[in-house]
Length: 139
Image (cartoon, rainbow, N blue to C red; front, side, top):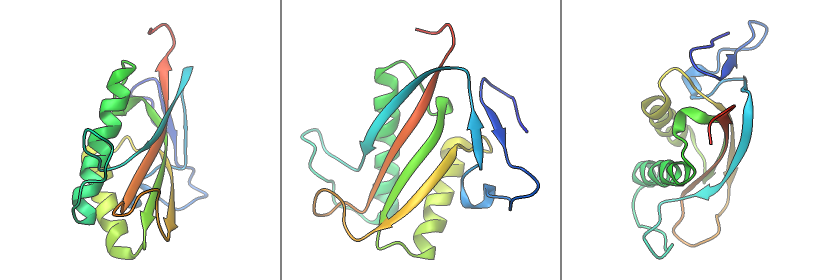
């Protein structure tokens, strides 16, 4: 169990260590829930930005950070991610894991990865949504 901020991250010994894969089994935090819609590698008009998988993952996380900043939060406030990967394969899992460790360090949120055939718009290879917690007393 880890309590370095308002989040409590739990990876029970009865379960495998999920951290190499870029997530934690359970995360709790006191405060108000904030739901962030799916973010993807998009331009100012919402059109998908062409690029390989790694580039799209990076830009999608940039967009997620911007959405959180709009409500006064940061990545560290996220307790759960939903990730969607077109034509998922082990190489993409490794790329995503590296991006998650770069962005979150060892304070990894809970996460579900869904491999999908396609996303909302042609050219989208990755999408991420989030649940964050505004700490109690923060407005």
